[in-house]
Image (cartoon, rainbow, N blue to C red):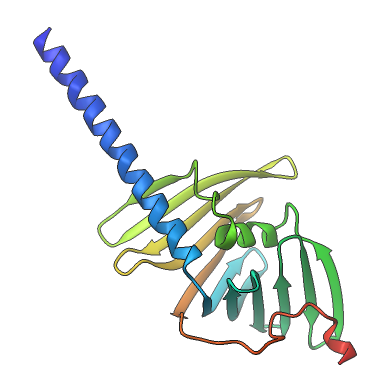
Length: 193
């Protein structure tokens, strides 16, 4: 009986300590995104269609994300809360779309939704923190994996499970000391300027 009580005490103690540690990590990660004023990074994205390269830009001031693919095609996406602009520079083609339940919506929520990391599974390793979260979009489950370098805390990769594998965006050389021109995140039709 003493052994059983001891075992139960250890189990509950470790369980509560683990939950407390998870809550601390969630808080640190949420604060990481909340404290970003401006951010830019080169990226490499791979998915079932191949490999693309480009730059991603974020601004907490205007709550927008700009993704500029420069390889293999010159394409720009500008995302805001519920609307996005697609601009194929080479074809001079502009389209607008609703971001709800799209990959764009997932990216926007990772960077700007304060509650996004609640109910996520966090695995802390020696040099990294890995977050796993499952969400439902269009009645389809999507698994999201986000990887951070631990010291200092820096986002390194986002993986989204899709039907045919993963869409993976790996961030290279993130820069937090950048300023943007006034209309850098504008979703006005660039062909009308």
